[in-house]
Length: 75
Image (tube, rainbow, N blue to C red; front, side, top):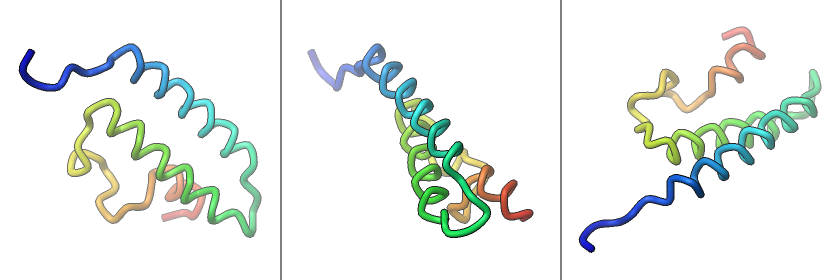
């Protein structure tokens, strides 16, 4: 069989787990000293987009900051 067969079921499971991790990470955010958590959330969101097949240039934050980060920081 030519080409790479995608593991759609596996990706759905991965996405579900990553979404739960994002939810948990968001619950740990504090007003100060949690920038590393925002970074992790952004990376996890990027990984989900990758698993969903969404290309980086289709994402609405071209400078690399997530929409969640913008909401928190008033940008």
